[in-house]
Image 1 (cartoon, rainbow, N blue to C red):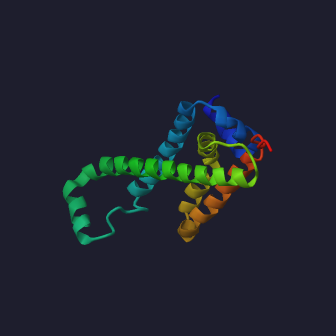
Image 2 (cartoon, one colour; image 1 turned 45 degrees about the vertical axis):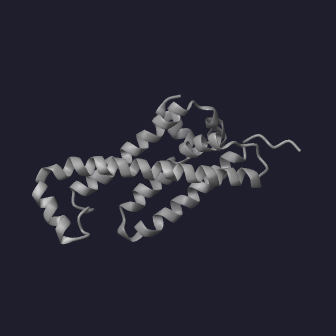
Image 3 (cartoon, rainbow, N blue to C red; image 1 turned 30 degrees about the horizontal axis):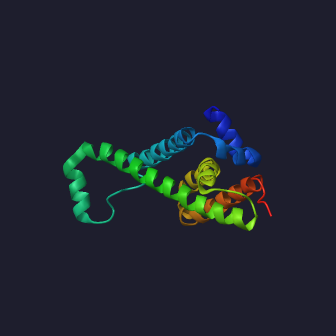
Length: 167
């Protein structure tokens, strides 16, 4: 399956989201890393344009950033990529665990590895919401809550199509 097919199906087809549990893990991780790259590029662009500053914490850090000069940009890019990777993989793992609980409540047969894959593909819309809301300072603090609720709804919609447990 191609990236654009996964992307479109992840947005509007919960039945296919459930079927994505059978995708090879490499394909799922490749899909996730495309979003990590997008997330990093947007974050780095905001940093370069001055919208977000890494050194607001203390005057010592600000002085140090001026000392290293242009090296701040590659360091910031790598750091943002590492942080985005960590954030997204932890998010997928935690929501995969929540998906297991949702599957138990809905009495569906689901293993964590299958729900992790479904969760990884269903992170599409929540990450897009996070990116959009992060652009507006008024919504930055509440954006994580809204995207989390949307992510849980996508997972629940997909779990609905998982096979039922035997009685």
